[in-house]
Length: 523
Image 1 (cartoon, rainbow, N blue to C red):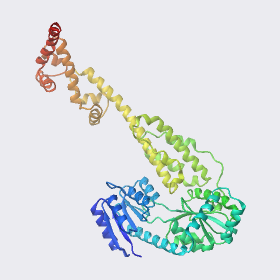
Image 2: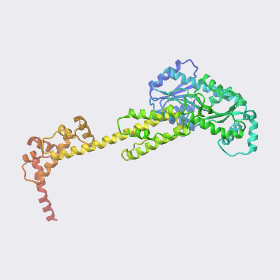
Image 3: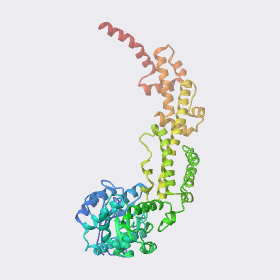
Image 4: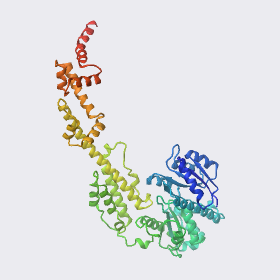
């Protein structure tokens, strides 16, 4: 099979490097196109038959995620591999939701890129083979049947006549079947995420056309399969074809009328698969002994949150690991884990509520923690939870530092205003508030908007202007009264700020009342 590939990256050296690697791979490719951004890429996709796009996520004008959305909107059928320098799960999650087949981090390794491209080519072959095998069936009829079955499976009411009629289409299967749920094993930086169509194709190989019916494609693939065939067959075939998938299977069920009950069981098993990510196929027997009663570790949760606002991020990470340790979670029904997640989110919300007025436009992403099953696995959820807790910890720590800094600055300013007439320098003031000299200097300038020396000069000159205008003190006396050791340094500073000598300033201030009086008389 030949394939056209489009490389999209705003850096020419990366485009050239990827193109060079692709030419070295032992696989047939028709043509390799290149684009510097999503806008150029979209024009090529509209004009050319492209099977695979290898694109960066962040680019000017139109980024990779927007490109994926636009091709989806325009119904351009193409597979994507995402390449990015940002190892943020949020980007990978969005890309995967849009149908990305792999997510690779820069710098891209040759073997990872080759593996990812080979996976996509294999999937294209599988889709073509499946299409050939199924073309004799009416697509519209299959989709209608599947929709009706899915609605009945999920609890929609249906009469006995419909059940009997539908059973006749696959009478042998519905006499003894299991529900099988498969979900793509979505791991960041793992090339070649497998699709529902590929997994369905393997299932038809394992069970035969009469022993397998697809009931749902998304968000998880759900199949009714022949219960007389061993539960080990399909997992073994997927492993042989290197298709990573999370799989659960229900107990055998007899009769289509029992489909809704089987659906409840398969969804419960699917949720429990988060507790047992290392099992290749989860069966009802694996969760039969899980404890149904428990007490949440509220004291441990409170102790963990008492670390908020400290520099103990390591202890926080250890605390989260203890709370979500697999040996603990695997003892209980999945509801325990869900309740634990909710308790953690509630505590995060309570702490955020306190600090919210001081956070400005910053905020925690609570919505991303609402549903454990939005994540590929529990490890990904724990990582996201840990990230939000550490962000909250940083907010609290910065707030505490800011509060302490404000107190220290207020005391420093008070000290300056009380002692401006004495010999005063930065070292004396920083010692007074017990802060490091360099730290206090940076803190003062950052918060006051001017350096210490400039601020002290302005305070002294402000006092000097008042004395010049309201008293008869000699200028040399005024200079000493506001803290200047020499008349010369005082007059120089005064002239730089006011643009005139102290004597001229005094004369102008003394002249104003008389001028005003003569103006009033003239009026």
